[in-house]
Image (cartoon, rainbow, N blue to C red; front, side, top):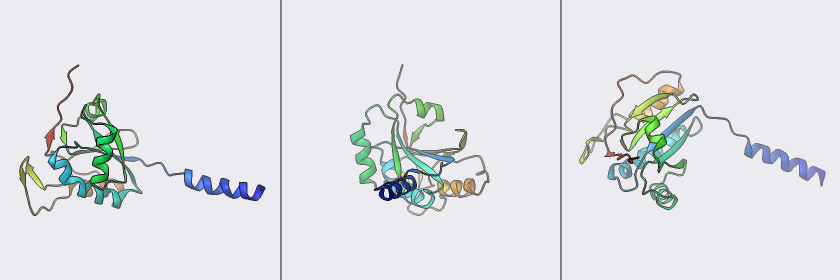
Length: 168
């Protein structure tokens, strides 16, 4: 009995103990935004590449978002490595300065913004998508940040559906 308990504790501690991640990725998305839906594939690939180095969050800044709609977006768009963050009062969106969905903001362990911008250059503007694109800004930013380098500014602005902020 004691051996079983001892092994259980060792097994449990291995499962519970996780390395803290100092890089936090916030992907601001909206369930009905076609650009958010389109960019989900890129967001999924990036999380798969960097999940061991960063934590990934889908932030839903709309008052109409719910656990059900956010979970549906996450499942339908194959984003299992992302945490869902409902931001109905838009405090996170305002604090980080998000303006559109999708927009990605990366912070360090001190919650300092170290990247704010687009996922890639697939969209020139809402409704104008490139079929061939070459700049994967989020991937490049994460690669440089993980290497301890700064991603060069100015960061390219995200293109997407505007976040309408709630009136007080």
